[in-house]
Image (cartoon, rainbow, N blue to C red; front, side):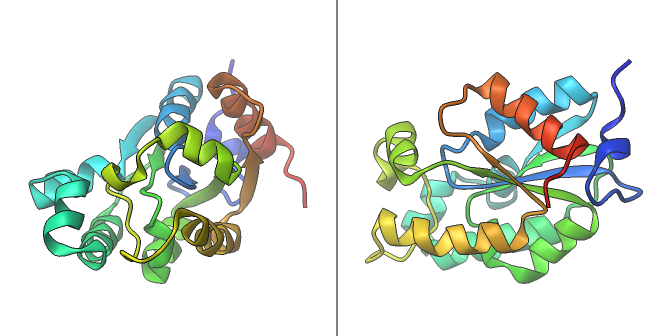
Length: 182
């Protein structure tokens, strides 16, 4: 019988959520679904919640109102999130809101799915069409560096995904929660 995620969490809380952070293309949504199935949890994709809240795609928000508007909506959605025993896939820019990240951390364990920039580029292709929240003059390299620091700051656990398929990343997350490395 699979142990419940709550029993293996690094920071177990009464909610027992598992929060995935990382760059677009890191596998948050794909691995999140696998983790939810593996551990018997529900799955929440906050990008979808943002789109529902705004009534349009992430890219449309960025195109029409700018990246700051997307971050503001994302923060509102994350602060309203009140779920139990879920795997939560956050948008790549969730880490720009300290309030939102503290809220998520208080309700679960935060896992950083860490992949190198080259793999981000390979996986996301034309990043201008992905609804990525960044300054118009900001390169993907600069964004990666800026976010890496934030992901590392908020992560309870970091799982390196380079060279692993989605199933292997899922298992690496579970293993890191069972046997945390400090």
